[in-house]
Image (tube, rainbow, N blue to C red; front, side):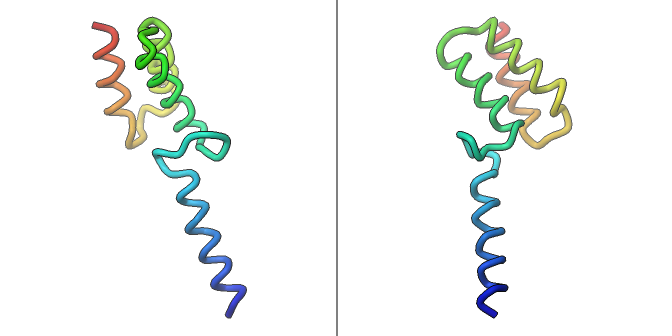
Length: 78
């Protein structure tokens, strides 16, 4: 029983480390790409932000974060 509990706890914690808001080495590739684009935008490097958002959308156009990436891209492109 203890082994089953450990497996369930590990699975739950792994989900926390790779969720949509995760950053750092445990973040998913898509989360890292989007965070990079957001950092460019926050730093005022809009040309790099647009390029990074375009790369994200080319790779992850059908994800749940795609609408936000599109809106962010449009905001920095204007």
